[in-house]
Amino acid sequence: MRSAVSALIRKDLRLELRTRESVPAMLLFSVSTFVLFHFGLQRDELEGDLAAGVLWVTVLFAAVLGMNRLFVSEREEGGFDGFLLAPVDRTSMLIAKAAVLFAFLVVVELAVVPAFAILLLGPPLGQALPELLGILLLADAGIAVVGTLVGGLAVQTRARELIGPLLALPLLVPLLLAAAQATAPLLSEGGAAAAPGRWLAVLGLYDVVFGLIAYAVFDFLLED
Amino acid sequence: MEPAAGAEPAVELEGVGRRYGERTALAGVTLTLARGATLAVFGANGAGKTTLLRILATLLRPHSGTTRVLGQELPRRSWAVRGRIGLLGHEPMLYRELTARENLRFHARLHRVPEARVGELLELVGMGRRQDDPVRTLSRGMTQRVAICRVALPRPELLLLDEPLANLDPSGGDAVEPLIGRSAGAARVLVSHDVEQGLAEADVVLGLRAGRPALLAPVGEVEAADVRALYA
Image 1 (tube, rainbow over the protein chains, first blue to last red):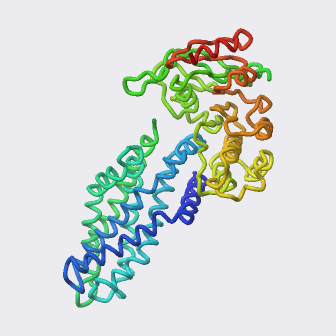
Image 2: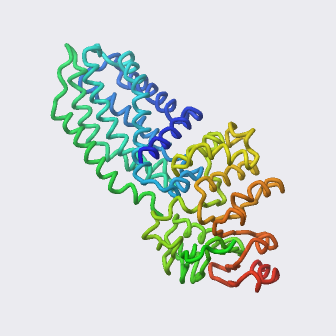
Image 3: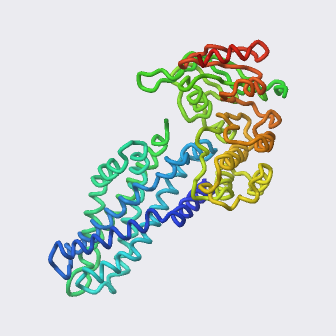
């Protein structure tokens, strides 16, 4: 399975490098959203709960863009059939696609978090960065798993651009809540407080639960 | 090629059918295809040819009847025949933004085929000089040659070929013969609208009309006129 996962990941990353369809769109969307929040909220600086909410809502909507594109090449260019004809475990596609979406999110956040700090965030980010990084990685794992599951389901439908967000966003509410709650103390005025451990635990639990659900049902998404 | 002695047939179908909603795409198909033999499938558009190929390829579940491919009952043991079947359909199953070589290397890794075979196959079909060009820049004939390489990569025991020579010039047809022709040694299910060429390749002929078998006979008992009548 490792060989199939690695082949799928390399293929998807190569396709993204050639087409630049997902990551640039996610980046542009995120930065545009920050600018809109800047003007919409009529505030130069955000902190605490509000800052965390703005950051995570933006990341989630950017992730939906990536999720919608995740299976398009498989659907439109016969990739599903080619994969299904091969003697490989079908779970390898779940793992590979989730890894690719995770990588896209990390790349996007490498640019988006500094942009957020410059455009909207009041308190300095420096001290909070290591903990924020941990929260981002935990949340990205959950978004990647749910995004892959929903993307795989939505791409089988005609209205995939609509079905994807409609299914994904409600499923991601617990993750949004936990990520925002864990992030808020780090972005507070007057110095970063520690991220609450229980919200980190919720994020970890979310990743495990949805990882298991995805593992259990992904095969059926590829079935006729 | 003579069927391997003692080997189970490549394909055994008994009353196989498939519906799409209320519409019956295939019904009552019963046939046996020996290893190394070729079944030519004829029929007008919508007759059920592609549905039959996709059932044999494990990509569609039959809704009725019994399907055995390479000795394995489908869909229950589909996993046991994956990698042993090559499907060349209407879609080349190639990523347009990847080069011919990258596409084949990807499939070689999925099928655990040594990557050296990729270069060999591309040279064999005359694509050596264009192997590093993206598939989107290739002509249809060239894309078809690469798709045939994809099918031949794992040396399948059963070839499912839908108009395999479409878009190929005569030299292309000759070049791919060792991969998907009779000399490849695999059992073949060949869908064709070219009656003469289909009959020349076939050992057994199946004619479908509205999803139902209208003709099933050894090629020696079939006249070209019988096949043309399927399109009337």
